[in-house]
Image (cartoon, rainbow, N blue to C red):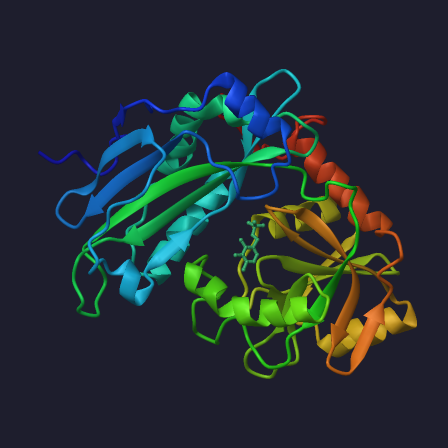
Length: 368
Ligand SMILES: *Cc1c(COP(=O)(O)O)cnc(C)c1O
């Protein structure tokens, strides 16, 4: 029997028989968490196939997946993912930030990768289901969070090249420490002149693993140059800013304008980006979404017209960019302190996320 597509999925919950003890969990949460290194005791799994639609929703012990070696994801990279956090507020409650936006983006990514669309309400429900059993894993240290990694893969065992007729959606969660453990410090960025992150008409606007696979080599080049991240330019002219490997970018002008590259089809539309645009408007800054050339950055910083540059994304929230380096140039000053506008917006965004100021835009959703 198949349930109507709109019916909420009924979850089967099977608690882990090897969950960590309170003491073991506390030792992990109080240690150096880093990012993406520890995982909670449970995970969500939901199956999809063409005949039944979404079905078999489960919360079960965190553990390895069993996949047929012919599963489409392993051959043609049919995979998408999301990144969203749970925040513990001072009263112990657990909240997340704009889950509808992440759920809608997962649907857009699914459409591009011909994967099935999970209803947005089911996306948020999947986070709630995991928090119901693993809420003790939401850390409470300043700027710490529980990072959710929802993802979807094509599971059909078939080597023909066409959209898979079976898929699975999962959510795992990883407690994360403050991204900047020793205070927010500006980073150095490497301009990738040989590689693009995404092609015109390609998958750049979808959050899919393949985009990240393509960014690893340029990212390695950035590290070899002493930089922590790489900046990509547009794939057609190699002239206009796109974004970093996993963060959007903003330039703050001395005259009160804040500029970010317009969505080009090959830029990933960050939810942090959209939120920064709103908070910037709220503070009376003039917001510009348009083409931004690399020369505008170089010349603007050199002339003092661009006073701050930052990157933003869920994992690090807002990262000040101190310096941009390329094969034959360097602009900015890595030793200068983070900019005022950057830090004010960062503070306001985290204050909303951690419940320290009123949520005037209705961005927060309670998970527990
Ligand atoms: C996820 C991601 C971002 C940031 O998106 P947020 O929703 O703000 O976390 C930016 N660029 C890329 C390529 C991404 O994958």
